[in-house]
Image 1 (cartoon, rainbow, N blue to C red):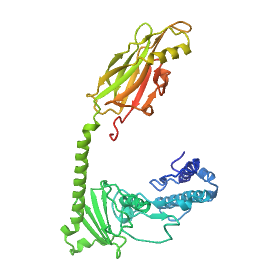
Image 2: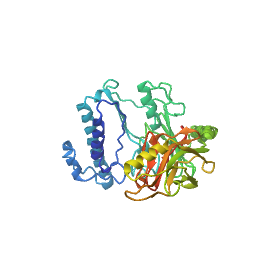
Image 3: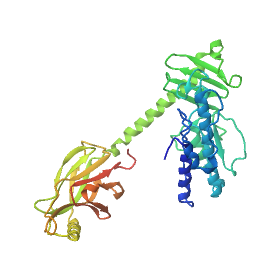
Image 4: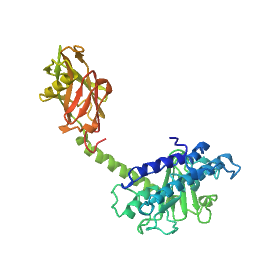
Length: 410
């Protein structure tokens, strides 16, 4: 798959939606072609989508980059059309809420800058928002002032679902929300700003420069009203100061809550129930947490007399009944992301001869909680397998255990 082609991405989305036509879905398609350097893809991709066969490049403007961007938009529009057509053909369009938006704007020299991360003028931050569903909308056009932070709350509002307390945005349909949104850009001198109805204020925290624009009278943001000396600097920046302080309080609260919850996220003990078969010695395994070796364990196994594969499996199954618990202190690695159980001393008598040393891990517990099989992966080197009874390992190799091991912890 070539993510530089929105047509290719759209086809993958369509194929995904068709896999289980009776199942409700939530999907996101991220278009890449309208991101710098605006690669419009190979002509071969038009062959993938028959209706897009005439989608070759067009000369819109002389500016090479802007022209490439406009052509990328054209391909993205065709790709979006393919998705809508697929939804319509499947009969799902009327029962689907389709939301179209951008993640940022794009500048082409309006203020001497290009791409999107250089400033917070409207060409950098103004994005489209379209919501499509015949039962909810009827070609209405509205102009509320909002931000991406308000998109998810708007969708939740449409679905009639409550908002999580930590969400900062508000539904664009709410009559109680202020007609205001804030901007922040850390890439070009710590720029902060806000739009309140038609007033736009930009503050460069590095240089101290303040800009004020009336977007109704001056949509291109060419006349800095603050330079005319009619606005009070403190009053203009007060909304930004209040917003920044609210973020500091919010972050402090989140950090404090995380610190309060840290205790239950500390994994202090590991218990491994293990068994095995002995041949010229006991099976042994090393235990690692996030790559740190915690120790070696020798397992008292059942003497092996197996000479065939079937006998080896039967022997190990019988030995598993007498699995013993082994306890490992995790205080040195209090919240590991992975645990490795490495079988280190496999031995066998050879084809047709009796005797084979093997390892069986019956269960793994962290802080007394059983780790489910979905988090266990035995590598191919061990020639092992995991089922409801545990994990069998027939040659040296590793059983990997993936965290997080405590619910709600990362």
